Amino acid sequence: MLWGLRHGAGLAVQTSYATLLGPPGATLARAFARWPALGWAPTLLFVAFVWLLFFYEPATAAAMAAKLILLR
Image (cartoon, rainbow, N blue to C red; front, side, top):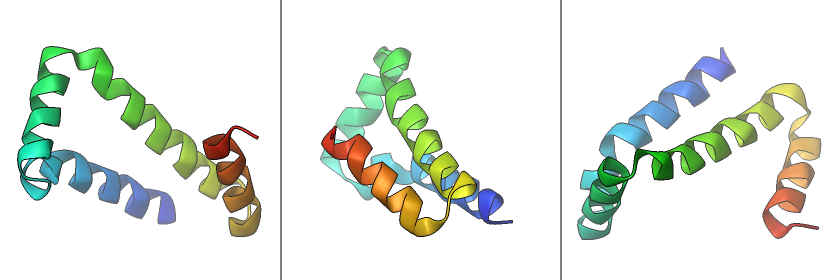
């Protein structure tokens, strides 16, 4: 069930970021439309972090995410 909630949250952000962020969101939307491969990076990052939460306990997932973000 949590996986579905996280997936739904990701879809909600993906469909509304252009309007929620205003001009920067519109710029991002144009960039993603022009270079679709550019949109893959945030999608893959989101999925990777959600997988951490799916497979590990929250404390372990948070520690692993911090290591990934800080590259330590």
